[in-house]
Image 1 (cartoon, rainbow, N blue to C red):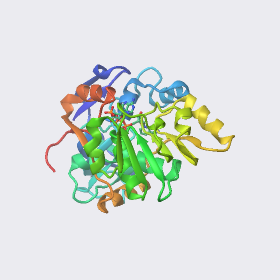
Image 2 (image 1 turned 60 degrees about the vertical axis):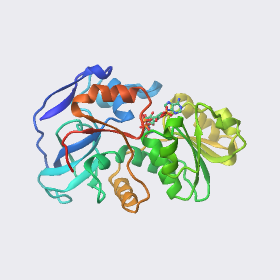
Image 3 (image 1 turned 180 degrees about the horizontal axis):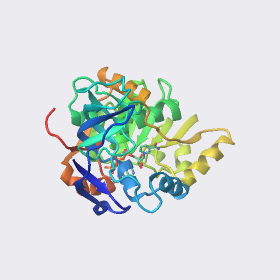
Amino acid sequence: MQAVLWRRYGAPESLTLGEAPIPEPGPGEIRIRVHATTVTSGDARLRGCQGAGIFWLPLRLAYGLTRPRHPIPGMEFAGVVEALGAEVTGFTIGDRVFGLAPRGAHAECLVMAETGCIARQPAGLSHAEAAALPFGGLTALVFLRDVAQIRTGEHILIHGAGGAVGVHLVQLARHFGLTVTAVASARHGLLLRSLGADVVLDRAAEDFTAGAARYDIVLDAVGGTGAQAVSRVLTPRGRHVFVNFGTRDMGLMLASRLRPGPRVLCGYAPGRQADLLTLRDLVEQGAIRPVIGHRMPLTGIIAAHALVDSGRKQGALVIEILSGG
Ligand SMILES: NC(=O)c1ccc[n+]([C@@H]2O[C@H](COP(=O)([O-])OP(=O)(O)OC[C@H]3O[C@@H](n4cnc5c(N)ncnc54)[C@H](OP(=O)(O)O)[C@@H]3O)[C@@H](O)[C@H]2O)c1
């Protein structure tokens, strides 16, 4: 099968396109014919194995100390089940599925455990649309529900609202009954309004920390908002939440626990099957829709990584492996 090959950590050019054996599913595993995958900010970060500060070592231990242990990268996928290992009970051949694999999605075939972050696709979506959902959608769900612990009627400001995580944060926050202010480059304005943002601020022209509005939650989807400046625009029980964070932000989180007033929160979104099922329900209810900012073929994998590295992605960057459906 054709696959992206990842033999060393580094720039986008460290990836090559090549042939790999078709993987066989073991007990409890299924093989998926991948129709669409994506290049996410997570894929780009892993490619170079860049972990801020203390995260570097755990990342290297997980993925390979000097070079990648597993030769095929890629997490997000949508496709069709084409083979079942022994003892598989939850899926049948021909099921349209989507999800987040630990690795291996940048290939024509992918094997993963049926208990992993995989589910049948929401009804009515193309493979490309289904592939655009899990990474941003699951992160947004976990950060709103579990980390920020949102309540109906609160006012949330989402910084970095145009990216894969941001477009889902805007839609879910709106669905859960929050007032949404989105901060992004002007080029995302129309999209963010169509997704339900009540107010959209151009990040190049307006400094939300200097305005009169007060927020219950400032959710920073990209990093870079200053804790001191943000604390001035938070309500007394406000939360400043970092999706992308480093050791300094973790220190601020611990310090904020020791004093009254707004809290700083960091978190991690694991890919859980139960949350993927919730996400599927939310799509089928019409609460959220996938946002595809860019489409490329598998042969464009280096350009795709370069675009993600630029930090200017809108929504998901989908790689179409098999055309149709
Ligand atoms: N903790 C977790 O479990 C977890 C899970 C998923 C992702 N993440 C992290 O979350 C971050 C966002 O992920 P993503 O997938 O949404 O990224 P993405 O799709 O690449 O989007 C990034 C967005 O950020 C905006 N941006 C870039 N620089 C900015 C700046 N200085 N200030 C404000 N906005 C800026 C860009 O839009 P404009 O420049 O056009 O405005 C772009 O749309 C990544 O760092 C990722 O590693 C963490």
